Image 1 (cartoon, rainbow, N blue to C red):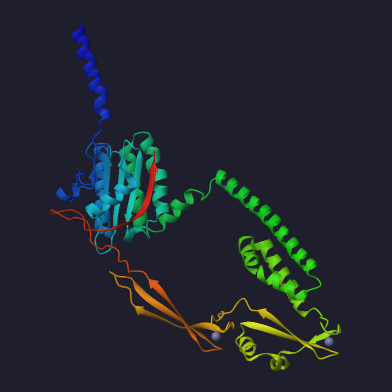
Image 2: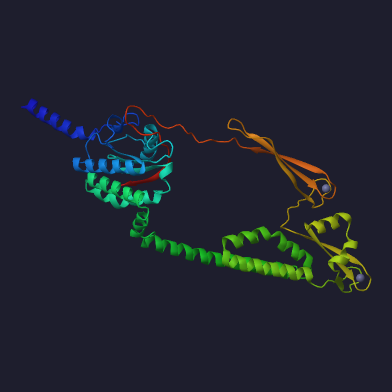
Length: 409
Ligand SMILES: [Zn+2]
Ligand SMILES: [Zn+2]
């Protein structure tokens, strides 16, 4: 009696364990049906796809190959172990060389049953007509719902039908895109609240910023030149604020610019006698500048304002740096008169070695030169060798850049 029980239990355990131990495939062990028979496009060793669907898919893909020279393969695998399906799809694509090597128009549909994942992988040449977002839609609309009900043949043949439709009639992509709104309600609400939080934060940050400008102006009201310089030095922050918080940031930027302009033209009194001064015009002020200052002003890297006392003729020269200039300070004479005069390649980069270039800066004032060398990275050429192509049939050696999409069910 015990022996009988033992046998029954052993048999039951075997029956339960058998389907769990699905065969694991590697890229090398997946049979390529195309190699043995050119009319076959579906590799499905465990028979998930029914015969009617298989015939239908084979007909569709043959039609696609004949009319548009697109090479496609459908692969249904019980398991690939712990391998990543995305990665597996790309490797299988390259291993089989799906698509003509000349135009990389390959297409691979692969489903892994134990992972409940599916990937559509497109060759370089198909990325334009079948962008990733369309592949993702096809998976969500046709494969996922059918696969959830175990209708693998139906899901796969509808997905193939839809891809065929898109490749043959490009207007079809617009239809598929129109079916689904870009954002669902939940995402929309989330985006709106993010936008609101952003606007409120932006408002308060900008408010604090304008208070700061106001405080600088008040603090240095008796020294307009210092006030101007302080605002000038905070320009990076000002520009960043204008970029990240466009609306309020730009208002602050304009506000600070105006304050700076006012500070520059504010009436001044003489340090020696206390009498009011007047600002000399640009043509007259040149005679009061040193040769270095004269060159800086002429090339526009620095602006000099010359103020003269109405009473004692005492002069005061104020320096205003121009932030938007190609000139930088010369390390030898310290005039702001150095600019890039030559940029040349000394050693060109090749596919096997990095190169070197040099930038030569020349000072307009002391005429000295400064040389900066820089590195040119090695030229990287994408691999052009296709996958294996053996036997009478097989694919044409096409490549993929990993285009396509992935989905689960
Ligand atoms: Zn004076
Ligand atoms: Zn110099």
